[in-house]
Length: 192
Picture 1: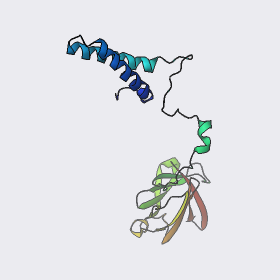
Picture 2: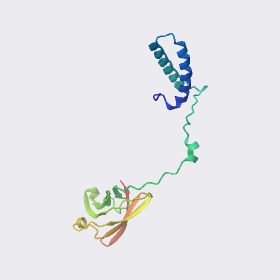
Picture 3: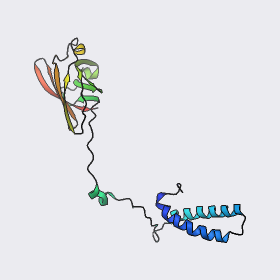
Picture 4: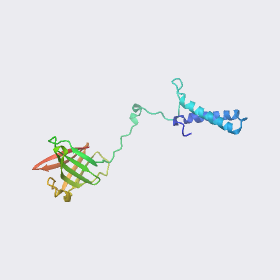
C-alpha cells in the first residue's frame, strides 16, 4: 500500500480488513479470478474514498501527527547548529576611496590572491599571493596568518613584500591591511 498517502494508512487498513471479510463472504460463489478482481476493485474504491472524502462536516482523522504551524512549534525549535565557515570564492573591496579602483581577492582551498583592480576592472596588478588555512571548527569569525608566496609576489611591481599577512573574517566581512606609497589601510571585502 505504498501508493496510498501516509495520512490514510491506518484508516484504509481498518476499512480494508472489515470490507475484505464482507466481500469474501459475499463472493464465495464466484469463480476465484472474479473474486480477486472484486476484492481488488473494492479495496481501491475504499482507499480512494477514505482519502478523498474529507469535508468540513466530517474531517478525516489520522494517527499521523498533524503538521505543526510555525507559532505552535516556535518553542520547540532548536538553535541552528554552527557550521564551519567556507571562505573560498571571490571577494570584492567595499570601502575603496575611489569608484573605479579597488582590491579583489580569490580564495581557493589553500591559497589567497589579492589584486589591485583599476580602470573599472580593466587592469589588475598582483598585490598578494599566499597561503590560506581554512577553518576546521564551527564558528562565525576566523583569522589566519598567510605566508607570502614570494615566487609570485617578488616579480610583481605592486605586490606586498611582507612575509606574513593576517586576514580576519567576521560578520560577512573579510579584512586585511594593505600598504602602498607609505599609506596603510584596512581593506574590507565581501563575498561576491
